[in-house]
Image (tube, rainbow over all chains, first blue to last red; front, top):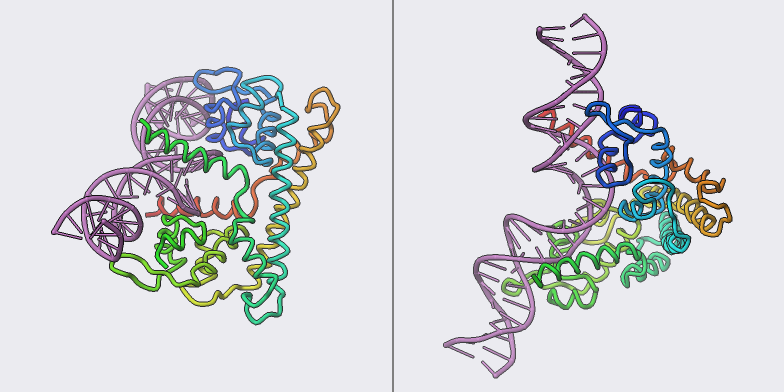
Length: 152
Length: 152
DNA sequence: GTACAAGTTAAAGTCGACTTGAGGTCAAGA
DNA sequence: TCTTGACCTCAAGTCGACTTTAACTTGTAC
């Protein structure tokens, strides 16, 4: 298959395929002249990548998990910790969803007078909703970078 | 209160406060020399902003909702549609979480041989997990921008 | 009265995941 | 033979939400 065929079959734009190849997430079996030639199993691999993204993994994490080629070595511990993270996110979102739902039908003259809304506001104020561990990580990475820049 | 005080009380860094002011999300009551002076109600406003962010609103959306000053005019329809969106996200995440959880304990020799995992893979392949309406919107905005650039 | 910590601005940088653009190569069809 | 049009590479741009940096200005404590 050439890149256009893969794009069509998978719904993934060619630019993204090239990008993924550059990142080492996928690879072509060879070239016909300049043109990449892909094996059919690329489709499953792309699905795997999409799944990883949907689960909240970064491309780098996915690259680690599925390796440069062959069958993925997915660590069960990693899966569980991602599931846990997802679960925490879900709980927060449920809180938010219910809060929003209530606020939408609440009879209080202004949202500010609704106790439910105010409780939510309180949670938001102490950072109890928002920012999960992934975000904190990239936050940390950022400051580490800053630190390293400083120490040079 | 000066900016440091607000930062301390709210946990929001001064740089973010200046940024929010620039964006019109908050405003200081005046200046002492160069220095911004904030009224105490800034704290509630910041909580409101944090809440909006946690609910998945962009800063621009929040700006629209809470207006340049005074009490927010939050549209109930908007709240409901955000709640619905959140709900769809939650459903997908529950699917993912359960899938991950299962994969983590699945006895199949490789994840690829596990029907549950493969079902998930199938969903990912057709884009059924991933990308919610918000992402699609910014996607659309991006292409609109590209279009406009082209048409200039 | 002077040093200095803490404020100020405007511009540039960061992060991840891509997309876009410019300029080049090449096989196939008219 | 010549022209497309699909592919190629590499660099630069995009998006949102901030942070960082550089170059000032000030209120305040000594």
